[in-house]
Image 1 (cartoon, helix red, strand yellow):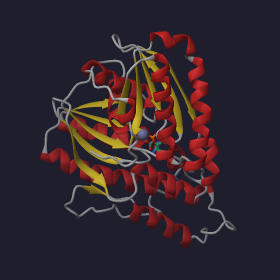
Image 2 (cartoon, protein in one colour; image 1 turned 90 degrees about the horizontal axis):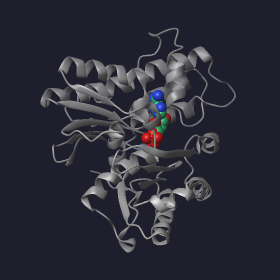
Image 3 (tube, protein in one colour; image 1 turned 90 degrees about the vertical axis):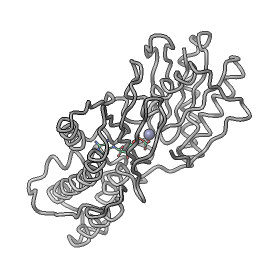
Length: 335
Ligand code: KG4
Ligand code: ZN
C-alpha cells in the first residue's frame, strides 16, 4: 500500500491506499478550522504548530500497517511553506525508518485525482479547480499533460467566500456558511453586484472587486464596525447576491472556454467545488454541451490525504521516486 500525507494548509491528513485495487484502507484528517476561525483565516504559525501535533498522532494509529507500506507520497507543492514542511519532514523520516521510496505530489494534481479515487483516471479531461488558494480551468490531454486555460489575477473563488464571511463575522472557513445563509434570502432583488470582467475578453478570474462591492454595501448599512451588526435578513440577502455574482463570474468565462473547445468530460475539484449553486450551473452547461460531468465525493472535495495517495500511486507505477536530498517544498508552484 501507499501512505499518503497531506499538510499543505490547515488540514493534517493521512491515508493508506491499496496500490492494486485502489481500496482506501485508512483515511483520517484533523482539521484546524476551529483554531483558525477566530482570526477569520489561516494563521501560518498556528497551522505549523498544529500539524506537528496532529501528524504524529495520525501516524500512531496506522503503526500496525507500517510493514505493508511500499512507498510514501507527500504533498510538497504548492501551499504554506511552514505547513508543507511538517508533512515533508515526517515523510522523509519515515521513508528512512521503513526503507521505502518517497514520491513528491503536487497538491493541485492531488485534487484532480479526487475524481478517480477508486477507479483508473480517464483523460482527456477539462477541470475547474476551485479552492481557498486556487481558481483555475485546466486542460489535461490524453497523456495526462496539464495546461492552464484560465487562472485568477487576485483572490480565489473560495477565498472570496472566506473574506465575505469574515466581513459579516461568520468565522472561517466561510464557504459553507455563506452558502447556507444565501439559501435563507428573502429579497432576491435587494442587492445587485456587478459580475467581474463581464465584457473583458481575457480568460481570467478576479474576485477582489466583488469582495469590495460587498464591503461597500456593508458600510452603506452602517455595519462596518463591530458596534452595529447586520440582521440575519441583511446577511442572507448579501450572501445570496454575492454567491450568484461569484458563480456567474465562473460560468461566464467557463462558457467562453466551452465555446472554444469541446470537452469530452469535465470535472470540478477543490474544497469550493462543494458549492451547490456552482455545481448545478456546471451540470447545466455540461448537459447542454453533451459533456460528461465528473464530481468528487463531497467528503473528498476539500484537502485530504486520500487524493495525495491516489496521485502518488500513478507515480509509483511509473517509478517516479524522489531522493531525500532532492525532495524540497515549493510554496508557489503553478502549472
Ligand atoms: O481545497 P480546500 O479544502 O483547501 C485549499 O486547498 O484551499 O478548499 C477550502 C476552501 C475554503 O476557502 C472554503 O471556504 C471553500 O473551499 N468552500 C466553499 C464551500 N465549501 C468550502 N466555498 C463555497 N461554497 C462552499 N459550499
Ligand atoms: Zn486544496
